[in-house]
Image (cartoon, rainbow, N blue to C red; front, side, top):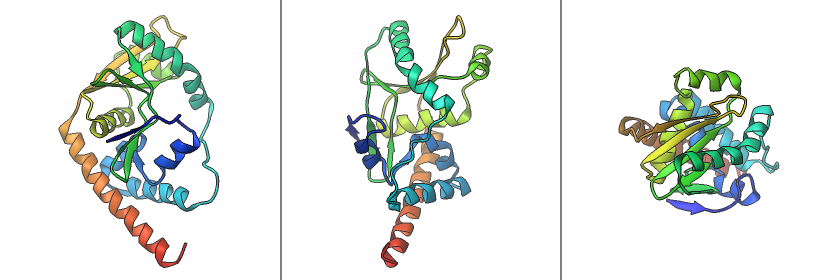
Length: 199
């Protein structure tokens, strides 16, 4: 594991992230099926393209970035912990993740600035979406950390912070490791084809 303390979405961040499977697509990676193939082709297309990285943005992602700092401060206050921001963490040549925060020596935080519907669902006792739980598992696998707190922050509610702790699940780790292995094989096959045609 190596930590890059670059700013997320910076040129350095994009460079180290290139050609790597990331935790945001952990569910597809774990399934080892058509979704993984589509994902690998997408990251390799981006790797070989000369176009500038397309920073995906919409209302929800912009809102999330705006609220992330507030959520981090509230989390620190409620949990009485010290956190650290990090750019990108690698595991070998083909895998990495960008956790929102590191907590001490053992923890991670992944913040979701959910819209009202999703936040209210969590207040009613429902769980985070499966893709976020897989993301947390992948981040723990990559970093070796002992827990990941999934955090929903929405200042529209009196209870504006919901925290659900995720702990390592070896069965999920095994599926992710198999997915990493298969994804790496796909990446190398694409590299071979591109080298063969001189692309």
